Length: 138
View (spheres, rainbow, N blue to C red):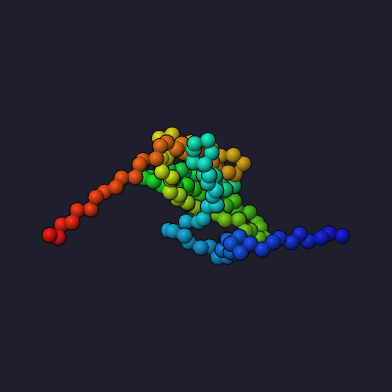
């Protein structure tokens, strides 16, 4: 006899699952959502993105513009007879703001087992500059 596993309710996770399983939601310019995690490791900012089923040589583009890292790509649908598909095909995009001190000249990106990992070395943060306000209404 088998038993059913019961998962504790997590409202945020349930909402994300609901949003992803519902009708396609356009986030920006019709792009689809890319799941990411980010963290710091050994003096670098690391972004990992779930991108299964894509060819990193042809289907993924990583770029830095200003303070934003952008991951773009496309998942191509194979034409075959099927009864059901919950896979997502088409274009996708995700932009993330880089932390202070990110060194755009030394970014590295690797792809393995459906995970794209982008490593951005962190240098010294630029110190905050106070700007005096000069009254001109007198």
